[in-house]
Image (cartoon, rainbow, N blue to C red; front, side):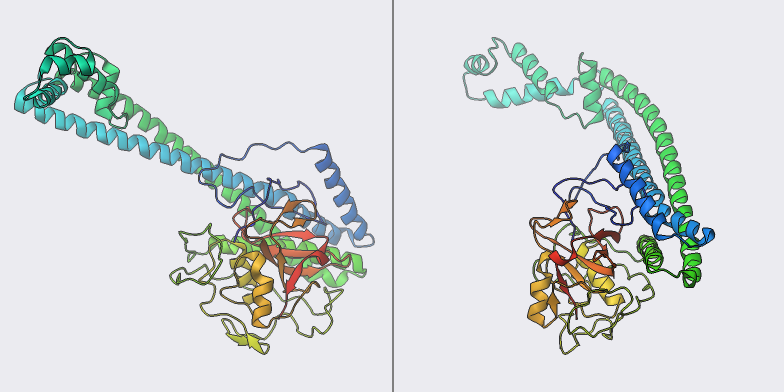
Length: 474
């Protein structure tokens, strides 16, 4: 399940506490151009300063060492790591394009070399002055004219008056329409002279020389691009390792925080870092499978049981009940994590709809992440919940509690075409689904989400108008 948007929204550069968007403009991009450099606008700069100041205000009274750790981790989450992800993906894309170009040129070179070998064999058999094109057209003309009025046909077809004139014109037309994908014919056309074998052989040899030079240059470019991509990936991993160290340091020092605002700021920053860590684990999984229909949404049960998604990252420590859940739903008494065994078909007194695990959900889509994350939290989740917008109705039919009150672990359902905080619009055909990671004191929710429109899987953002959406609970 992908979250498509009506327009592309770039990640806002800076220390974002209230929101952070990792999104793209569509579900599937076959060959997207490399991302272009993005100048920070005045509004983005002001937002960065504002959010940085807001975070600092929440840390008043906190020791300078701990405050610096929180601020630095926030900068990694919202600025450095997203920029490094974009740079690494751009470099990887450039490397793949360079390699593809080099391989295509090598194939053309091999084709030209084979053409040369074939032509040399023909020369051995019938000589170098034999004109294959003219002979073929002449034979075709002879067969066409058998039992007919030759002069009438010649005049009607090509306005020719003699057989030689007809053959020459047909040969010229044939040369123009030859396929450019064939190196030998390319060379013959470029030569633009007599089509005899001797001339064609010379043209092919010249083409081979050119292709060898191109292949060598492109192979070197591909190697350089691959090296740059590796360096970008190394730089990204270094930032993520730094984030892990700072997150662990923050977790070990949280007990020093005495104010509610400081605790909330620390929790949000740590959770954002944890979600990026899940993305890193997912990408590094050696068992990740590619689904040929990974850009198709799930609309109904199917027989696609061959797809085995990458195993879910190890669950993060579960949020403490009653700690991050202001405004809990009336009558809700479950904790997070829940008590549904992985893959359970019946839990909390109702059918979960879990029949084939996560195998029915396409790779990297929002539905797959919602399934994986709910499973991590031991909360019920079905295999055929449908597209993102369908989850609420499907859940009701199975007996889940569904309402408009967020709770940690709930699946957050975005209706088709629903505006989200003025930042983006849920896909008009599929909608979207995410998982609530935290309910903040101001009523906003921090969510984790999948989708090919995001640079990472999972991604995260904060949604302010939380009461506008439906939530699937237990």
